[in-house]
Length: 113
Length: 111
Image (tube, rainbow over all chains, first blue to last red; front, side):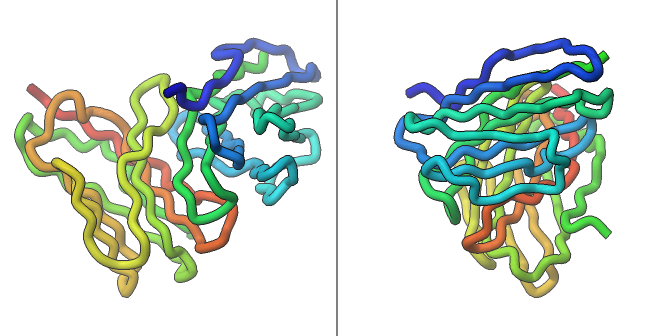
């Protein structure tokens, strides 16, 4: 069975640009979450979506947005990129919106120059 | 104070050793406790999860939760070089919507 897939795997952008990251959950999983992992730290929660509705948002600026599609795939968008946005962006899927283990993809490595 | 604290390591052990990895947390509302293993340039891989206090065993891995002292442990028996990775603990509030990760402990198992 395919796990969580993310694209692209690597991305280099310039300050001020916009980026879109994509995620396909494990088949049958209806919840998708996004996390940011800066080098040397644990992942930090950005968003959770369940059945196309936002169920939670972490402490990130409005430059970060996301959505979930009818097939449960998801996009994370970041506007007006800053150097500090350079990180590994992880997508995780789970069966339910709560109390269900999260399974992560291998992430998108974003470098902002 | 961070919600979840882990010793960053690196923790270096010989092959075959018993490894103890630990986390402390401050939020008494945490009910689910996950352990993830993360290899370099990969996403976190779910190892084990437990609900509330007690022990859970899976092969060479044992997860232990002591809610009274807000202390979480992961034990690895007969450690292998392939266990070399970063280990992340991540509690979860029941009916909450997010994992709260520690910074991770780097483990190195020497052959």
